[in-house]
Length: 308
Image (cartoon, rainbow, N blue to C red):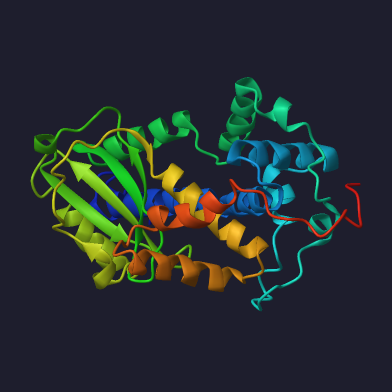
């Protein structure tokens, strides 16, 4: 007996498509935060050399080219072993071999063209492909014709974290354009944050059947699915928002790690600074350790090792 045809527009198929897109975009966000190691290493170099973030970022690129590895791999060699969370944990072999004097001409690094190249190189590693994003939107529109787009957010919780938003919409959505939404909360990808995927549609109740089908799959917990979230009250513009704030916090953590704190202790200090200044905004609290990198620290003498 031949298998029955499956209605391509059935709620179960639509729900599976929504869940698949949510999981795919969660991986994209995870890719963004795996790149946090680069910004942590930038903070280490800013503290060690009293250099700008742009210069430190370019130095990481140069170190990667020297060893024929990616910027992310080069950055990770500058960081403490994350399994050793004790104060003053030993830096990696590469970090011990970096001299007190930067091995590059910082005046040359200040060139805007060089900085742009370094930043573009970093963005390529983030795996954000506009063509892929548009393809996702087209797939969603075929599944749910009233679909307008989606947003992926990293939302801070009571333990801190920084907000990061990726809006995959073909054009700016005004507040009145969105008539319904469906919100999925994913597992935490980094401490202090939760991944949230929100789908938008221009018809009321557009996701009712899909939401029921999602729950029926057993792959989504009821607490992680909001079928009636608050609709946007401000325009939803396409793009990535919050990267600068996230980078500033990671830079500050790198500065504190270079001073001998464990990563957990560094995160706690930033959170304490935010609360002490009556501000829960971590990027603002991050400015204090970053400001200190603008003033040279006394050195105890020449480095024992050179950069090989």
